[in-house]
Length: 117
Image (cartoon, rainbow, N blue to C red; front, side):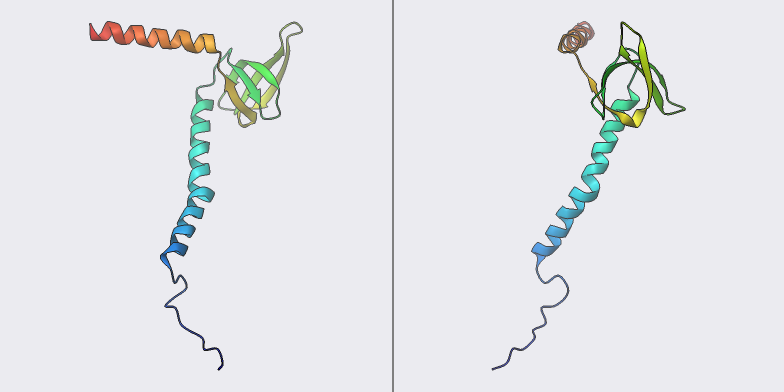
């Protein structure tokens, strides 16, 4: 009539628990590391005259990049030449102009065409 404790054979009695643990590990550890690596690659390609948006939402143009000091000088207003210095980590993303992107794709296509001939 009383309840009898049953031994299920360990801490993780079902393989589904192990799969849930591995899934949680992926989303907590592996995925953020991959995103950070991708972001770091984009920031390594940062150069003068790139349009950027900082993590606080300020839109600016890169005036110079100093990788040793981990900082960039951004031009905020062209008319007054207002500039500010920020760390590279505070740059949210690089804005890509569609026209510039199309022009670059055309150049790549032309190079491929010349190489195949």
